[in-house]
Structures are given as C-alpha cells and as structure tokens.
Length: 108
Image (cartoon, rainbow, N blue to C red; front, side, top):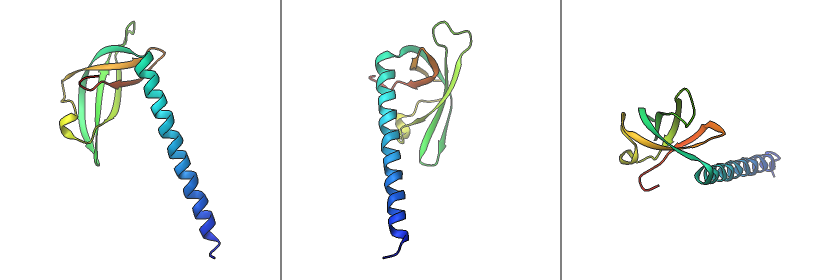
C-alpha cells in the first residue's frame, strides 16, 4: 500500500469535518439572527456576478446608528431572485454587531 494514501484520506476527512462545522455554525448564526435580529430598510447599491454566484452590495442604517452600514452578501444563483440596483430591501441585522446582517427575501 502506498504510504501517502492514509495521509490523503486523513486530510480529506479533516476537510470534510471542517466544512461540516462551518456549515453548522453558519446555520446556527442565521437562526440566531432570524430570532434576535432587528429589521431595517436597506438599498441595493451594486450587483455583480462572481463566477457562478451573484454578490449584492447594500446599505442600511440600524436603529440609533449615526452612519449607514455597507455590506456585501452572496445572493441565490438564480438571477431572477437577485434584487436590482436601487431596489429597497428589508434587512435583518444583529443589534450587537451591525456587520452581521442579511437581506430578507420575499415572504420572509
């Protein structure tokens, strides 16, 4: 047996485990944002395609903040689901950390 095979197997397993943990952490963060986050109106400033995904830059002003917050997030891969530049959007944000926010989709 090639001695490199067990090393490659272990590295692949570690990569899968790290991806699983990151996914679980992101899901937990989103659930917390959905239950504890506050709502604000935002505006889409820029939309661009980045490989197979879309990125959306938007701004919103949290309650009590002096300055608007600029954020960029990945959007669904379907162009029809991506908001247009200039579109007003609802944003859910973490009142303890304004950098944690997301655009709400229709029906949310």
